[in-house]
Image 1: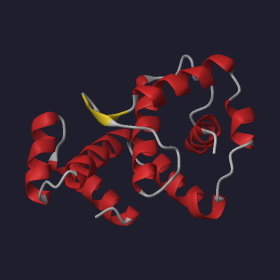
Image 2: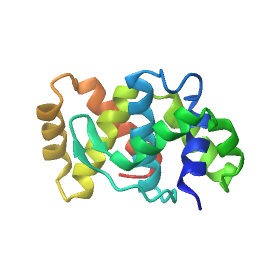
Image 3: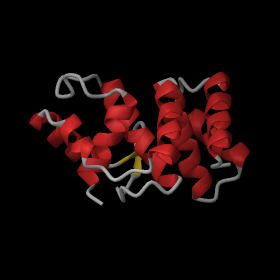
Image 4: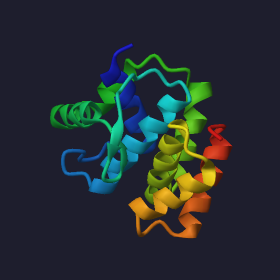
Length: 151
């Protein structure tokens, strides 16, 4: 499957399509974290992520996002994505409804858990990495991972 088509589909489903070249940092952050969590669930984009300032980050995804934005054809590319809408649509809708900071905390927490960190140590590490990560955000991120079946 073509990564650009799949990324465009996710962007459309997340509602990140209008003036994407000018779009906010929060919109780009939402796409990064949503795609990371979707891949953890088996969504077939195949981006490689590494830990960065705001959690798991893919430079290739960032470049593809900007390519789609520059071309202004997000909706056009999304039309050609071969996606099981019944399976993935509700999951992306759930991610779209979450606060972007919850997505960031959930993605970072999942990355640590996936690397073998025990849950309580992973939560403490997230709070060290993200001083703004309150207990409420950590709990919301944990809840989201459980709802997604990633915990």
